[in-house]
Each structure stands twice: as C-alpha cells, then as structure tokens.
Length: 275
Image (cartoon, one colour):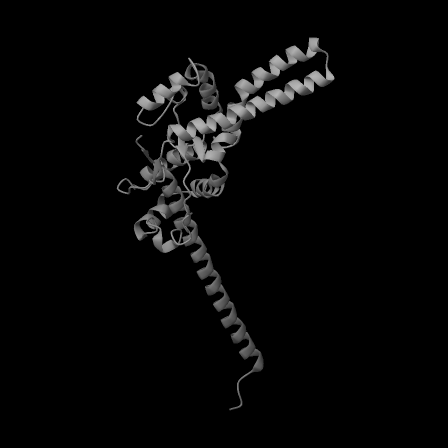
C-alpha cells in the first residue's frame, strides 16, 4: 500500500502510512470481543435485577447502542483510536491528516454494515486490498484512513521562533506594518496569535488562511512562500517585538534624561565649588 503525502497549512510535509490488513484485523478482533463482553455484562446485569419481560427489550436496545455507538464513541472522543486500534498502534484520521469529525465517524459506522457483508468484513477487506491506501467502503465514503502511529521526537521550536529566524522582520515589512496596519488590525493580529493554540484545528487553519491572505495583500507579500499561520505569527512577532524594543529605548532615554536632570538640580543646590 502506498503512503499518502500531505502538505499542511504550515507547509510541513506529513506522510500518512496506511495500516496493514493483518494489524487491522487484529484490532477488529480485540474490539469485537470487548463489545461482546459489554453485551454479556449488560445481559447479566439486566437479568439479575429485572424480570424477563423488561430485561429482554432493554437488552436489545443496549445491544443496538453498543453495536452502533462503540466505534463512533471511541473514534470521535479518543482521537480516532478504539481500544483495539490503541493496542495495535493504529489510528483513524481524516483524509488530510486532521482529527476525525463526528459526522465522519457516523458515516464510517453506517457503512460498516456493507463492509461486514457477507461475512467477517469480506466486502470491506476486498475494497481495502484494491485501494492504494487500504481504505474500505466506510473510509471512502467518509474520506478517512486507518494509519500506523509512528513515534517521532518533537523538534525544539524555540530557536526557530527567535527574531533572527523571522523572515518577515525586515526593514521593508516593518515600514509597511507601521504605515498600513492600523490599531484595530494590530489588536486583531495580537488576539489571533494568542488564541490560535486554543482553537480547534479546522477552525484555526481556516481563520489563519483568511487572515494571512488579507495581510499578504495588504503588505504586498505575494512573493513569500509562507502559509497563513506563518504570516500571522511572523507579523505578530515582528510588530510587537519592534514595539517592545521601541518602548525599552524610550524608557531608557527617559531614565537618562531624568538622571541628568537630577544631577543638574543637585549641583545647583550645592552651589559653586570653592576650588
């Protein structure tokens, strides 16, 4: 199976490696027995406390909820990983490498009925073998992929965020920032840069893309190959770092003037030197 290469809005290449059929089948087996155990526990609990006339319909309802809600719950609430997938190091992701949405989880669960026909996911397995990225019918319908999770070391980004590595902190861009970006735009830039880490991925990408496009046109940055998020963060760093430097210089100059004035006043009070 071929891996899929994704280019993120930050212009970072991410390679999605499809999971093999063997590991997916083992994950399915683990999830199957967990769901079976949940149904058995539910049946035993209902049979112990309720008469058969009530226990049977409640058990049928509970079995329906487990059948249809098991994968939807774990894939939407646990980052695309059911217990079986977690054990085998697998994860379901969006076709672009983003986290799953609730709608996608629901579509995968509904189409699972077709995938499981005629027996033991025969139809779904056939489509997964024929598809270049190992996707069953549910994955094709929901635009998702089952991928293997690789352990990677997080890069140290502190150096990359330093001012000397900010490609937007140039005299030309700083001059255009001062002339063309007003107070409201500066406040918006600062608020967006502060709030971006707390936004949901899809909302952040869309908002950063729109804001980056606007500032790119405003400041004539069409020749730079930067994503919207890079433009916003770079401009915020350049703008407010420059303002902070100016404030420090202003405070230093004011302090120097105040010290000079104090010395002059002190000399005046002491009078002329007898020497």
